[in-house]
Image (cartoon, rainbow, N blue to C red; front, side, top):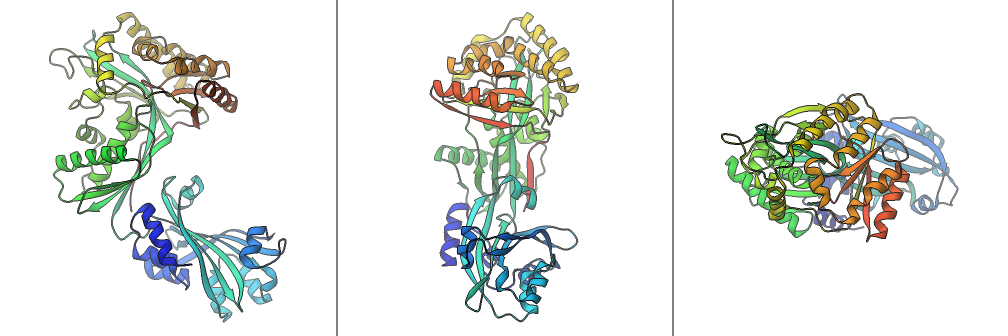
Length: 510
């Protein structure tokens, strides 16, 4: 293949790749020796799998052998000695019948690089590169390389040819954010469920307050590097414009010279009730501040991008993760707020304090059901809803506060799923959450009894929706099927089965 053309195609998808990465994709020499030259460290391999298998059709085609012929299947990690950083993950197939007894003996010994074996046996061979590509990191690749899911992973496939026949077929993978020639910051955020606002009455001298759950999926993943001009790649034009506006504002406010190039690798829609606006803004602010050597606290990042002025759940999810309750803002004359407004209309107000935070039980599952209906309230519509429906009755605020304090929190702290779930169910009919639900179309409100009937311990509307969530431990497939069946009858939708995330955003410098 034309490796130069393959590299151009990769760069068109993910952005510029470094000279070192081009060497690794295109080299026809020993990868182990090249890695030692790059890192200045001794490089070793760790064999994960070594076994004889029957060649499947693809392997037989790659090696020019007959399907079913015996093949040595080997999976290794190529890493630096000492710190054990995995540089390359490699899978190889070698036809047993083409090996000399001595070569076969060395190959079957664990932890000897193939290039070294070829050199030791004085085998004249050449490497034939078949392809090079980029794919999003799977969960397994994330674990192997200690990177985030969906980060780009570069890979190539090639054959080692001896005596005009394929001797070995190899696939090698390594992260796009390894061996860069510029400093990059990678940020991966969680999403969040907004269970409810607590006090939209304000008679106590405080207002807002929120309850939320941090989610492992979906999430936002982006990279940033210094650049002479501001640029944004990934997502649609609207997302790029939004990221560009946030980035320009942050750069101006921190007085940074120069600019940044930002690549959005994964994201989820805005105005569906899962807090993408806050997470996107905080991720951009974190990446830019880290690139410019400003290690700012999350509350300062929130101030820069105008988030957390009503609910503090989004900023707390970004910082801490887990199950979170915030304490709201001072209200009235001399307070932080004097009227009822959503976060989007409360710029300049610092995020509220977190007054309770617990790990969410790791064995509890969360299903998200997102019907295909118009997005939830935002902008002026959302602001008008706050103004026309607040203050809510004080009696409901008191009942809701008691529900959270004496049932929801004990359910989390005591890992009592039934108690927690029944509390979530009760919250749907109280305070501002009752207002949010009353504004939903039947495609959304009708999901709640369906999910409960399918076995969910508790379910509710997240923020202004349309995302609905259900909490359970086992039997989530039945709940998933019930949600899908219901949504299909009302125009469709999607579901995600995920878990809570008990840590905040991942931030890494490459």
